[in-house]
Length: 333
Image 1 (cartoon, helix red, strand yellow):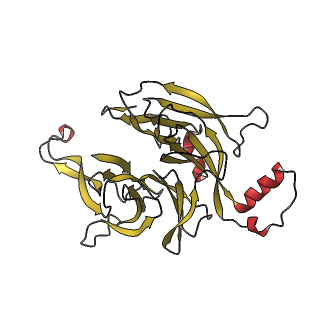
Image 2 (cartoon, rainbow, N blue to C red):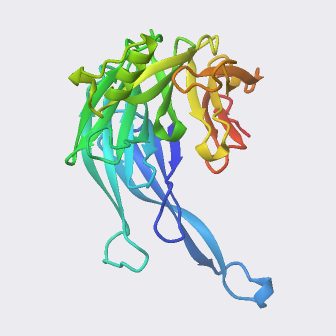
Image 3 (tube, rainbow, N blue to C red):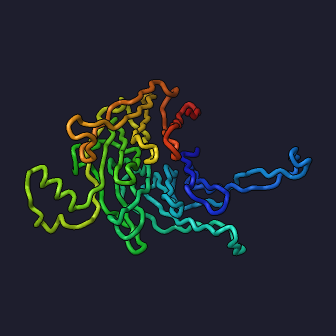
């Protein structure tokens, strides 16, 4: 069984690359190459070789002790994260040679940078987000969610990855009381959406300590900036809202439309055969409030598949198309 597939956002040259996560504990790396097909004649040229494309498995990453549940690339395609039933999260570096940099070795190399332990049960999903200089000194943070009902935020500092914080819901009004199946990143990396077995969607926002202190002062009509513990720029995730009872059964997957789409819609699917799309709406007083966002149902498609719907993804180019896949073996657009 292949559980997950993700295209790399960047590859050197004109090719392409994708990664697959499998129940056999391995991760497959596939690359697209152009080659000449002698079996076809180019009618426009009056004969000859026709260039075609072929996908080849160029690497197999091993290390997980059991099935790999999910994987994610960072925005530049230089890092790949994987997670699995063995409760671990792995971070791999993807090193690609430029097309004219022939070293006599494979063009693409993968090196394990870190094996992260901290979850007490299966890790269901991983997602990269930009750090915005709020988490360590790396360009990315990594978010993971688990059967242990929690979300963890991993950061990099001087080349070492560590658990920056554990998000359980105590920071805001929502507390997932069951498995967190998926997390999605939106809002240029400052918004996080969590999908849980409890049927709820959680909405989280990244703040600095100073911003949280300012919000607290505003809510209490205070003007107190003397507390040194709130003066830093360290990132913190706070639950700013939720979509309660978004599904009647577990939510297996959620995804936020890309920023270039301009509509911030959230899509979710789950065990109730439902595809739901939510749009952000103004509160009628102050308009759109990023600190207390409100969402309303935009579209609900019941019986979208015959059985559980396992994954939903927006087209990352412009957010005009959705794709869903389910236990019925069908992909729908």
